[in-house]
Amino acid sequence: MKRGDSMDKWYIEKGPDSDVVLSSRVRLARNIKNYPFPHKSTVEDQKKIVDETKNALFSGNENMAGVFSYIDFNHLDPIEKAVLVEKHIVSKELVESNRYRGLIISGDEQISIMINEEDHLRIQCLTPGLQLEKAWEACDQLDNLLSESIDFAFDEDIGYLTSCPTNIGTAIRVSVMMHLPALTMSRYIKSVLEALGKLGMAVRGLYGENTEASGNVYQFSNQITLGKSEEDIVMSIKNITQQVLEQERALRREIIKQNKFKLEDRIYRSFGILQNARIMDTGETLKRLSDLRLGVDMGIIHDIDITDINKMMLLIQPGGLQKRKGRVLSSEERDTCRAELVREMMTKKDKR
Image (tube, rainbow, N blue to C red; front, side, top):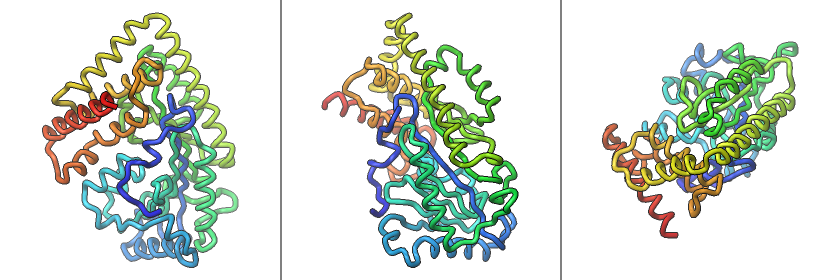
């Protein structure tokens, strides 16, 4: 299946435990032996790395052309790049880099390879809900396929060699994106984040490093990549995620038990604002959509599906709005278009 513009992708679908876990991701860092790391490589090196990766995947594997496509990242316009970041397919570093870069992506946009980011290759798989084993299996299979033709930089004692020392060893990053409104409202989130830090977890916002937890969405990932197997790291993150998940669910039950009307008032106020507002920035919209998602998950709001909210969360981002309008928008224009888009989508759900 070729990559298209259909919205029916992994980031719209529901998955296991989607009431709390929005998505799971596994990412592998790999570098090709005998080439300098990207920050020290020449443009000629970077072009050769792109060619070697494409050949390893597509040469002699005719069926792969029906699953994956190659995107010359250097020819994408700024809006297209922004949309890829908003979908969590590429990093801001890849967008902002002046290297010769490439992207290989599957038709469903679940599996991708960033070429010449911080490392030569960043292989990743994203899934809806809590499906870390599935994401790991997909990454492992693609890694094995590439390693049949590519000689990766590897040390028998240390493991995979990477640009950043914190990634050496397995060079695996396992992360989950979680919606934690009850933990945030009750202010237990601080103690949870402190506990996760002690367990060697990194905590970030919706778009990774140096971003805030907008809309009560937090991203948790492992910091330790050395001394444990990939399977152990995946299971460790899954177990920790399940503990946080149960805490969030328990608090949701407690909040509605203690003051159901107060919670309902908060949710319906956000519902009303989303239906009627004329100007909304990204932060406020994500906050209101967080309340709406909580209302749907707890059975307070009906006739709106989580997939509808997932679509709105994506489309209200700056890149998504500008792609929809087909041009660059000012900040004020985006705020107006964002409110208009949300009103339209909310109205459509009411008329179903």
